[in-house]
Length: 130
Length: 390
Image (cartoon, rainbow over all chains, first blue to last red; front, side):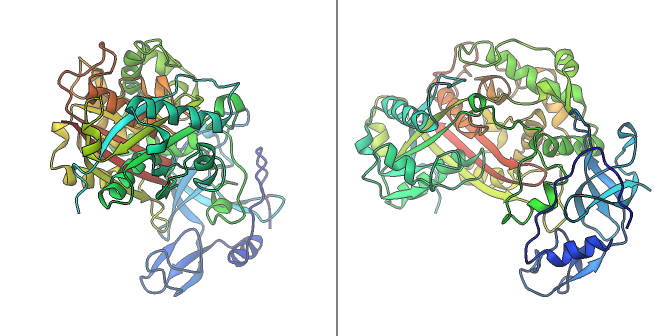
């Protein structure tokens, strides 16, 4: 699984018993969203209860990895980076970064694709221009 | 049961310090508590309800209640909604008083982020292993500045809001702060100066961001019968509302806040409309926070906030809605990174006729204080108060 270099050191995500399946799938390059069986909606972040009904009738479902930039900013720090909300094809808007691009070219509505970023632990889902 | 008319704010004290190198957080809590009691003409022995939030050291209210020597407490509440906690605490105190569960409520806030050199709005925090959102947000760079900046960016995209319009909010606050001897930033600034200040997180410039200050404040809330026996003009609760807004399962709308709900409840309880408000304290962690809240509270339509704040409309004596006449968090004080206490305090000053003469609203008999606590884009608490002078 190719890991793309990012200038910023990304902290490893803390894993817990509920989220271990998500991070295991991440290590295999799969972005697993939550899916509520009662309402037929994907949700984020993944959890073992539905944020719509509070019931346990949920299952993980793989995302396509395609989305568009819903909003973003550029952090004007020593190593600038771009936090963003990306609206996935499946519906949820997830908090992430836009990577592998000229920060000055990021636009709301820009098409992006999933690009896993390495950490000392599991990789984290970030997005690059499609 | 309506809380309208069921409680009064009789003590309001803002600590004069903005940099407390020689005092502990606990001492600051004690000093503001004493200041508010003096303001009210009451003593510590009168207090039977205590309210504090996450800035209070120790487990919930226990350490501060003990440190302050409050040994007659019948009601305690350490609800933490971030910076707007103290606005909600007034409503919680009113409810307890209305139910006869306490008579004299003390609310305190204090902190010293400036002296401690605490993480600013651009620094990421460490993950908490038990907070479910942390692993999905902190590695991605969840910071205060980014959270508000992304809301501004989306608001500009959807409604055409401009940086110039946001800058007017800071300009207005600075016009007020120039009259406040305790304000951290007393210089009047122009739109051009705000836009020329360095970008922190696009599109927010440094002057779009509030100050980091030490200090704090306190309030005393009591029954109307006790209030009328004290020496100060009576400030009475008219309307209240609170809520929380989060990610909605992964479908956040970045262009509005929980003020839409807490404000509607407060206006409904009060039986007034935004047009009746003579003065408003609007949480100003960032300029965009003010703009979004003004829309959500109904002072203008959603998307019209830029036009509403432009051209000095928030300046006392100039515009239609005098706001943050102490200079707000943008120019005066945002103690412990929690601005809700000072929002209530300035509203009380205005209603008492005790604001600086240069910014005092004539015949100020109805005021609103509103706050957003936490991170606008991720999850935040909202609390609204409507207060009147008898």
